Every structure is written in C-alpha cells, then in structure tokens.
Image (cartoon, rainbow over all chains, first blue to last red; front, side, top):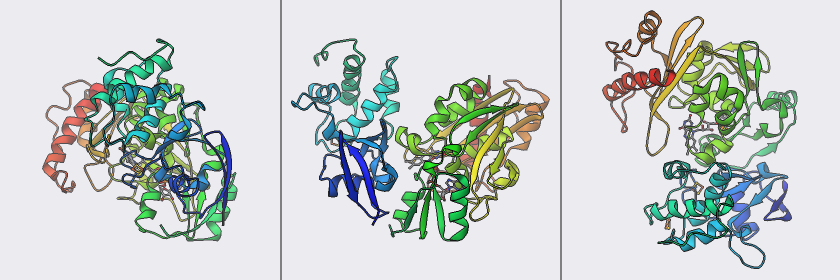
Length: 166
Length: 264
Ligand SMILES: Cc1cc2nc3c(=O)[nH]c(=O)nc-3n(C[C@H](O)[C@H](O)[C@H](O)COP(=O)(O)OP(=O)(O)OC[C@H]3O[C@@H](n4cnc5c(N)ncnc54)[C@H](O)[C@@H]3O)c2cc1C
Ligand code: FES
Ligand code: FES
C-alpha cells in the first residue's frame, strides 16, 4: 500500500493509504481529525476545505497521495496551543456567523485564504464572490460576510481586537 | 472509486514512458474533473500518472510575440500572473471566473483544454487567440486540436506540455455562468489580432466554435455598434434543462457585445 508523509497542523505523519484514498478520508478516518466535513463529495459545497501548502483546496477532490510532502492545515490547527481562537474563528463566534455549524470549518478555511490573498482589503462584494465555493444552508451568508470583514481588519493589523458586533 | 496504481514522475519523458507502456493509464493534473469522474466510476484507469511533480510543465513565459503557458499552470496562477495580466489581460480575467477559488487553486489550464468540455472557458480563448498546442511530440493548431465534445487531437499517451497564445492587439471575454455549476451557459471570447478578428464561442454548442459572421463584421468595422445586426442561429446549439437553443443563441449575441465592450 502507498505511504504518505504529510505535516498536518505542524505535526508530521506517515500514513498507509490506498492510492484512491481521498485526503479528506485520510484526515477524518485515519488521523481522526473530524472537524473537516464532507457535505457533497462532488466538489461543490466547500465543507471539506483545508489548506495545502497555504492554499485552500477541496479535500474531497484531492488524493491523499497527491498531498505527499505537503503542509496541511485543518480547522483543528487554527487555534493557539492555549486555546486562543484564530481571529477568523473569533469573528465567526462574535458575529453569529453560524447556525448548525456544518459549513463552518470549510467557510473559515476559505475565508482565511481569501483574506491572506488580499492584503489590500476586500469589499463586501469581493467577499461574497470569494465564497463562491462554499455553500451554507442556514445563515443566508450576511453574518458570515460581516465576520470575514471584521477578521480581515485584525489579520491585516488594522485593529488589535475584533470590532464588536452591533 | 476503483483503486489504481499511482505514479509521480518528475519529467515529461518519464510520464510519457509510463503512459506508453500502459494504455489504460491516465494523466492527472488538477483532478478537478478526473476525480469526480472516477468517483462515478465513469472510467477505470489502471494507474494515474500525477503531473504535479513535473516542474517543466509549470509557469508562464514570453517567447517572441506569444505568451507560453505550461500545462500544469493553475487557473489561479493564470489569473494572477503579472506577465499575462499585462499582455493578455482578457485571458487572466477569464481564468479568474473559472469555477470557484478552490477549483482555481487546483485546476489547470492543460487539464481543462485536454478535457475539452463544451462548457469550459479556455477553449473559446484558445480558438479566438489562435493558440498553438505544444505536446511532447508535436505542435497542433487550435482548429485541429478541438474535435467536438470532450474530444481532442491528443493521441492516447500524448501529453499536452504547454500552450502558446499570440499576444492580440485587443481581447475581451464575457459569459453567463450557470449559477449552480458555474460553467458557461454561453461565453464569447473576441480577439483582434494581426491576422484579423477571431471570435470563439463556448457553452452554447456541442463544442467550441468560431462565429464567422461576427468575425467578418468586426474585421470590417471594429466599433461598439458593429455587432448590432449580427444574428446567431439556434440551429445546432444545445437545448437542455438549463436553456433552449433559442435562448442560447440570444445569449451568444448578448455575450458577444459584452466581450466587445470588455476588449475596449
Ligand atoms: C465545482 C467546479 C466548477 C467548475 N467550473 C468551471 C468553469 O466555470 N469553467 C471551466 O472551464 N471549468 C470549470 N471546472 C473544471 C475545472 O476548470 C477543471 O480544472 C478542468 O476542467 C480540468 O482541469 P484539471 O487540471 O483539474 O484536470 P484533471 O481533472 O486532472 O484532468 C482532466 C482530463 O485531462 C487529462 N489531462 C490532464 N492534464 C493533461 C495533460 N497535460 N495532457 C494530456 N491530458 C491531460 C486527464 O487525463 C483527464 O482526462 C469546474 C470544476 C469544478 C469541480
Ligand atoms: S464535500 Fe468537498 S466540496 Fe462538498
Ligand atoms: S451554518 Fe448550517 S450550513 Fe452553514
């Protein structure tokens, strides 16, 4: 059986997989990192988004073997060791950007990639366009967009702390 | 998904060798089309040859009056490449509308063109810009490369290595995205080149095609009103649950005007 060596959330793992094992299956079933969800399994919904070498990808449409040697970050890897949430996680909480929470891990991972790739800042419209690959069936997106906007200010160092939700 | 063997060669020569030794092996680039197809068990390759480890397939460079884009260059890289944004900005803008961010981070120019989905974006650009397809063994013109729905001139085991896009004087693109799949319902790429105006249409028909009436009108008179009287016939366009042939014909006319405005 093929072996994959990947660094997941800073920790190196060597895992035996089948060639057809999807990255999301390896993360959930072998590494027991079940924060990454599978909504559609057809590359549409974005519930499975993780970062591979810093870029957001759909882990249901990537073979584990294709991630050989990569740095993978999942939702479990965002908070600091002492439990302090990443600004994006904190913003989702503060702005009530989730209801059932199923889409949230993927939303947060996509949102972080979006903010990091746009240091010049993002308009509301650009945030909505940037979330094209993530579907939420609960919130109607408004609070997600507000949360991302607020987190971006913290991530870009324009504010030390999150602007409180109104 | 059925299981398969997995190879990750580091050169085009090695990839071609593996593919030539096994007729049921298949290349995988971004996997954005191939993996969903394998999940549906639509085909059953004995092995996948991952092109992700081949450095010579990546990147964008200028060669004379053309921009040469490696087959493994992702849609995101095409959309953000400084050289492309400066010399063929319509191509970069087009790439920024393919699928969604995560599809653009993995999906590649070569995978999209080799797949030749009738609703994919790149084929219209390749036809309008008069691109040349560079494989491991030959060079193929855009007209000869696309051979109808999901069919190209690539022989089994032949790899697309790069695509050379001559720099146009002006170019523009517009499409109506299917709101669910994000693929093109109808998209029009217009290029004003040294050899005349060329218009490529995707999404509307069973494969990419050139709209010659529009080409004639724009070659005679490159102006905002040049397309006013030019009609697209619905004959041989697609009719499906997303839209009738008549609706798509109308979309082609509308998108052509928007593409012309985009070209400036
Ligand atoms: C949700 C979603 C939305 C999408 N929306 C759009 C859209 O709006 N517009 C659009 O154009 N596309 C869209 N796509 C498709 C996307 O652009 C794919 O990236 C593309 O069609 C295939 O590229 P790939 O690199 O992923 O190829 P793969 O899936 O890896 O391969 C596709 C095919 O090409 C072959 N192949 C790959 N590379 C080569 C090569 N170098 N030489 C020879 N053969 C090769 C493979 O064997 C396979 O048969 C979408 C996909 C998804 C999942
Ligand atoms: S589970 Fe991967 S995109 Fe829906
Ligand atoms: S919070 Fe329920 S799907 Fe988004």
